Structure formats: structure tokens, C-alpha cells
Length: 188
Ligand SMILES: C[S@@+](CC[C@H](N)C(=O)[O-])C[C@H]1O[C@@H](n2cnc3c(N)ncnc32)[C@H](O)[C@@H]1O
Image (cartoon, rainbow, N blue to C red):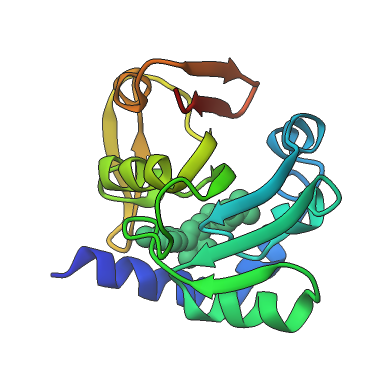
């Protein structure tokens, strides 16, 4: 079975069934503590949102960022972002193969995406490659015991331990919120 392919079908289906709405509901939308943290702490000239989904972080951060680009592997998400937002640039793309050159973005950002990938390494390598200054990763799973749980046969829900911090490398700061862990890697 091609798990990644199934995974994408999963997101596409969710879109139809309301991922657009789910990511805006109370507790997951603009009131979510990680989004509040982001609004308060992130400022950038150019910003890449990897796995932008329904563009909730665009709504959240558009006044903090001069040029906002979102990529997502689910075509429906990109279609909906293009239909719904006049600002921002929305591109179909894979976090594991980011369609940009090296050292382009002030901030490369990724919220609630790595947990759904079979592994985080390729995505992290890619985000670091395209970042000029910082990579900011928001994980809904706490940095706990390494445990790989399949939510169903269509998506992953990885719980990462501190190895992800080590993998990011030196110059990584960890911020523990109540529900989210935030990892900030600074390019040397
Ligand atoms: C839980 S949603 C999070 C959306 C958004 N970051 C947010 O926090 O509102 C996960 C998103 O990751 C996207 N995604 C999953 N695998 C991806 C990949 N390999 N490359 C890019 N996007 C991916 C899905 O299509 C989905 O939109």
C-alpha cells in the first residue's frame, strides 16, 4: 500500500467534509494558543507556510508578514485558499520537496503537519534548506516518549521525542505551551 498516497486522499476527503471549517472552530482556530503565540512572536518580510491547509495562519499573520506564501500537497486546499484570499500566494507543493531555491525565506513555518508524515527528516532538511533565517515548527504532539500511532489506516500521528530537536541541530529553542511544542531553529 502506498501510505503517502492514501494520506493525501485522506486530506482531500477531509477538505470536502470540512477541514476548512475544522481548522477554524473554537479551540483550533485563531483562539488556539499556538496561533496566539505565533501572532505575538512572528514577524517576517517573506514567509513560507508549509502545509498551509485552510490558510488560518494566513488570516492570523497577514499583518505581520510582507510576503506570505503557502504550500500544501492537497490540491483542494490550494484551490480554496486561492478562492478565499486575495493576498498570499498559494502553491501546490510537498514539504518533502519544497519548490524553492536555497536560503529564500526569512521564516519557514509549519504547524500541525510533521505529525502526519511517516518521518520528519526529509521535511526538516527541506525547510532548513529554503530558510534564510528561521524555521519554526509547531507540534500538536508534545515531545514525549517516541511512539508511532496510526490514527487509522490513512494517516499517521507521530509523537516525537527530543531526537527531533537534536535533528534540527544547534541553535534550536524549544517553547512548551500547554498543548503545543514550538521548535525554533536559527540558521547559523
Ligand atoms: C492538520 S492540517 C494543518 C493545516 C495548517 N498548517 C493549520 O495548522 O491550520 C495538515 C495539512 O498538512 C498538509 N500536508 C500533509 N502532508 C503534506 C506534505 N507532504 N506536504 C505538504 N503539505 C502536506 C495537508 O494537506 C493538510 O492541509
